[in-house]
Length: 427
Image (tube, rainbow, N blue to C red; front, side, top):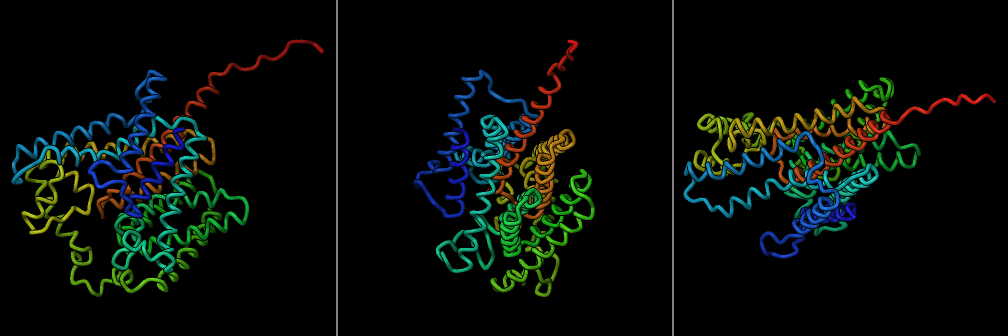
């Protein structure tokens, strides 16, 4: 049942984000909210059945602490009066939408149980990736031109969100696809995965995201470093894999140049940029102004969702931070920023410990894929605010966490099994 509900969640996410589907125009009555509510009901059933609310998890306290800090910041925003008027209802809705991805981690971690379900859920995320890449290709090749509003914006591939966020989403899952390529035994499967990877790299390049490219290179470096250090494949095979990957990437680059207009290439060129600030689309100026606002209220920040208001006051336009770290610094101060950083460090550390403690080669590769994709995701947060991809990241994290929990439980059960006594019967 939980897998059906999970697939329904993934499908509704894609339907609303990529195809702009709306169940109703009543605020809060979205198909996505309905799917989350159904998962909540299933979780409630599990609680009654097991008489246990939460499964043990090292980041539960940081998730709820971060949501608590964000909630308190609403009242700070009212007290500071840096904006003309504050609607408490609107602030609560904003907090609820912001905390949805974090709560999805908690819900999914407590509803998906065995490793088989985890693998099915992971496969669901791969289907989501395939759907995003496929819809982009269907639009670019002119098969379904109606998809242009969401999957293709201003000459750049955008999948289900704006191009820079889509690039971060792709970076998160490219290591997983490489792992599937490594695990494939039959040449036909390897060829199909290679074609899939080809089009993923095409989408990444077609986003024209400079931050996405930097995050991708960082993610790839982490992946090859960890997979070599774990002793999964020899250096010669790592080198061969890099050659194959570069070849696929180069082919994707040529295909991108033949299919896309000059928008993507122009974004990568510095010839039309007068300064580093203009080359980064004003991010240097926004960073400078954001840090100056942080210094004014460094401990608790300016309050929930205040960054845009402050930018409009100082720069005349409601710029977003284009940087999730800066976003937390300005809105929630050092208190919220510290909890935010600890949350991610604790998450990656837990998966790394899981990597060190398992002997299963498939699990090792999957943990490495998560760590490499997560490293690229964390890097990309320096260049863009991640809104929609946060849902996928925390769902992915919940699945990996559950796999670690199950693997740890299996190892403990093996340790506690009594050794078979040798027979003393003389034959």
